[in-house]
Length: 112
Length: 118
Image 1 (cartoon, helix red, strand yellow):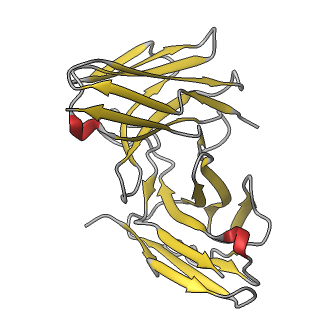
Image 2 (image 1 turned 120 degrees about the vertical axis):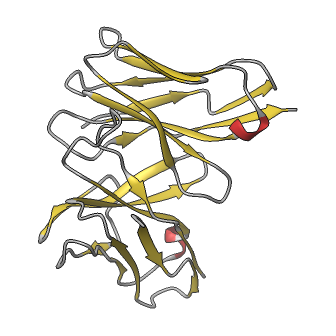
Image 3 (image 1 turned 90 degrees about the vertical axis):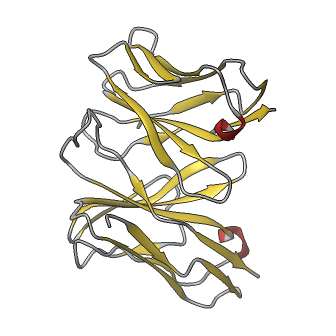
């Protein structure tokens, strides 16, 4: 099955800085890569996703890049704000499955 | 309002006392799954279901049971809970169809159930 590695486990930045979270996956047949944000005490919610036929996708201050050859994808958050503080999960969905495999999560702390 | 609901939200129980955590979705989603979340281990899938009467094991199924008799409901059953099942549990559902706004197969999570087994 799919295996997703996520780094770092904790990321601390100053407000206004950029943050980058990286994930690698094992199954070259995976074709869908979502990112979820989980605020403290809340449920995970999808913030952005990318499919394997696209190399980059942006949504305001967040962007995701995908390198299929290297089997890794990254979340980029620019101009971080305290409300970006949360746990972020990457995931990869195998071609024959509709349920993604999640990484272990990154705790992002944005200091005012 | 489209949502996934779970009950109870919090539960403290004792070893060996059978319990059920209910999960219901009103979005007519085919896929439903259960995850447990533990510090440092992320979201680990327990069981999933691709449709009514179709269930399969995830990564950590030991000690759990599920059933999918109706499309909207997917209860998680702990026949004989043990302290190592103390965790935060999430139910999630998703559609087979690609959603609008360029979204893929988005998983919609319930609010979570905090279970403590003494």
